[in-house]
Length: 156
Image (cartoon, rainbow, N blue to C red; front, side, top):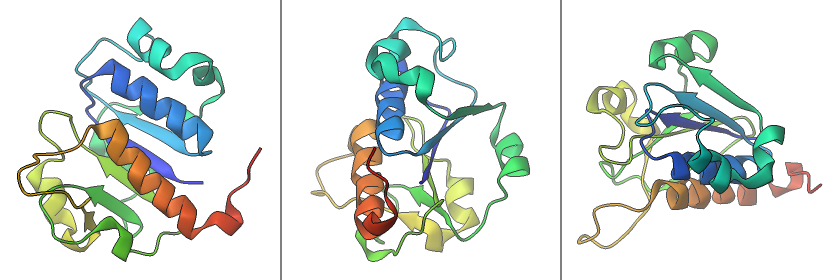
């Protein structure tokens, strides 16, 4: 239904948790290297993903250019960041949209955010909070996109 794009994830447990979410929401998970861990077969990924991983549609890419060669950047690509005032719930999402999430320690790179500032979205939080856990952020945004498109969502 939607595309979850993780750019250079650092924590295998987060990747596993997001993979489990992707499976539960019928979303596709796109993983862009380099990772901050070995590979997606590590036990921490498998443990967090439980037994869903084998059923998940997941794709790996060597870098962002490899990803864009297969999925050209466009106006249905949304960039989750704390560096914008545009809140995620002010956007109307469509089936097959792409949602990008950056490294746990750094977020999405500035040059990517500048590629399309109108595509940047944020989750509101108090000023004193630096950020949310990436798995929580993915959940919040994906489930709002599902809420907006619930008539298209197939509950298995």
